[in-house]
Amino acid sequence: MGKMKKATYQDENGKDFTVEYDPDDPCLYCGYPVEEASMGGTLVCPSCDMGVNRFTGRPWSLEEYFLVHKNFKLATTGGKTTPAFGRPERK
Image 1 (spheres, one colour):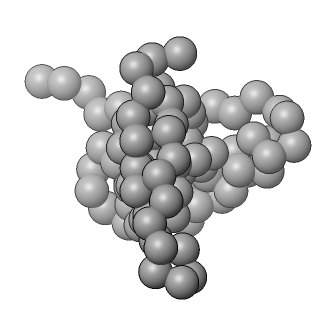
Image 2 (cartoon, helix red, strand yellow):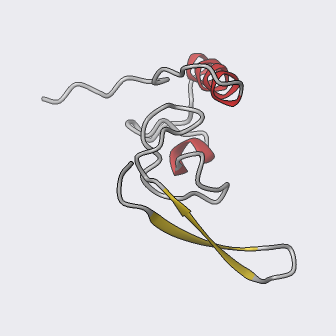
């Protein structure tokens, strides 16, 4: 467990509420650390929340779409997820 972070959201009545989350927890979609809270909450990284590959900045390919949704099903049923996309090679 890493250092906990806090994210503040508003409920449907406009009242603020704060949640704590571990930025090292894996994203339910891609499997990489969440790092920051997204509009959708703290279980999905901001890139996946927007349907974008976090390493290339491009929208998910059809193959990536199927991989992230397979990971989501596994993560929500207690299965082990694997990263949906590889890190690009450094030059």
